[in-house]
Length: 242
Ligand code: DX5
Ligand code: ZN
Image (tube, rainbow, N blue to C red):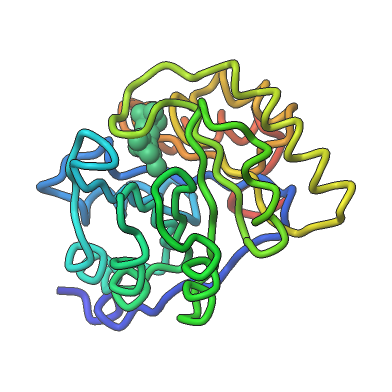
């Protein structure tokens, strides 16, 4: 094993809201070769990796847990964007923080102490995020927006990759972006589900600045070229930040 990779530490880069960030989701890669997926992401020039944690209860699918995150952590400097799809995120969030998450996002829909959990995530040294499903009204986010580093608007029903982008979420992106501008708040606006070379354009126009892409990235025959094309579509360079 490469000694440099073994000693890799967490990347704390968190660009200002508004500047586009790409977060490929390793859900769509081969799970027997998660380390290879990280290398694919790094060599394509992305700075974040999106890690989907599913419990088979809040969503009808299962993925991986804190041990996997810890083992991946030792292999990369990528920013770990950990998306918890759990019925009881307050009971597990700390394990993911300890495992090396840079950002932990939690859903609004289950019954648990959401505000306390958001505060706890920051107290463990991570950025925090609040997530809503496509059918959850955007107004329900408003009590939390002052206390979060990121708002994640699901653009598919969570649970599986490869679904179609929900265009009906675009007005919600616009609404949360307008509110962020009015209140001069610093949170990023992430979208997750069905993001590809076409759907990123109206989402960017609506105000999204953080783009999770699973299938579109991992199915690309040339991921490096895919990222360069994606950069052009959202108007940035992920490598230089320009
Ligand atoms: C879905 C997950 C997504 C998933 C997106 O529940 O939260 O992060 O990886 O996959 P695509 O890009 O294939 O829709
Ligand atoms: Zn996700």
